[in-house]
Picture 1 (tube, rainbow, N blue to C red):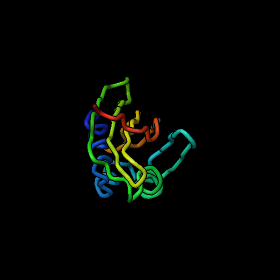
Picture 2: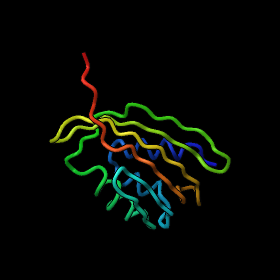
Picture 3: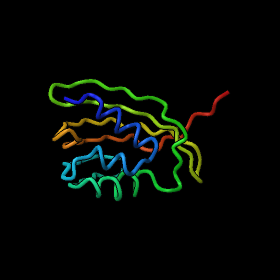
Picture 4: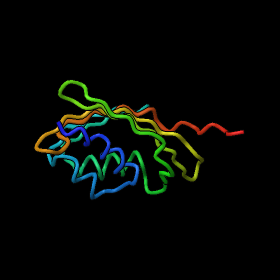
Length: 126
């Protein structure tokens, strides 16, 4: 298994890098996800990137200010990647954490499941 796919995915998402995200995802990716208010499904890399990840979850007005952390681990034939972003937009500053599980297909991500904690208000630092 290419144990770098999860980290590469999180890094590309943290940069909102459309080209890299589409290169990492198999064209016929099997994608399902859950955010606090909705379940998501898609079956193409274009749909996942353009309509879900950067079309609905992280909109143009959402600036990913920092990739706070990325953790990866193998899980039998799958890989787990957890990542946390610091995000700013017109309504404030937030932390966004997601856990993803993926399996490779032809050197790309062919199966992807993501659980998102949503946009959580960033704690005030003293």
